[in-house]
Amino acid sequence: MQKMLKGIVVSAKMQNTVVVEVSRKKPHPLYKKLLKRSTKFKVDTAGQSVNAGDKVKIVETRPMSKGKHFKIMEVIK
Image (tube, rainbow, N blue to C red; front, side, top):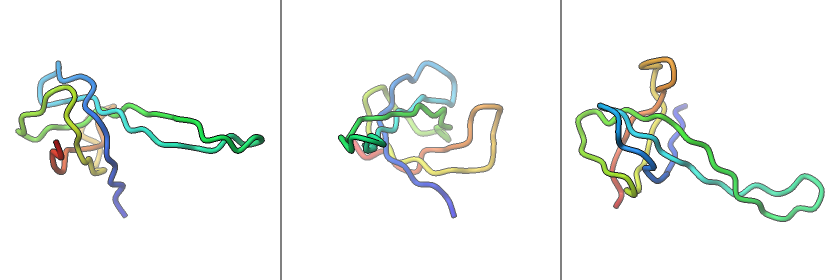
């Protein structure tokens, strides 16, 4: 099963690669308050033009390089 995540493009300075930040809310283990947590992924653009600030949907793929394991499925906004 492939992971499908939504995130915001943070950096688009590399060739064929962008950095996407995916945020989630996770409860504190003891106090149960919802905390924001985020993870940054390197994502393959696959020829699509994407700029910083765009919302994108990404999907997990086979490893394309040491740190690149996702590709852009669609640009939402």
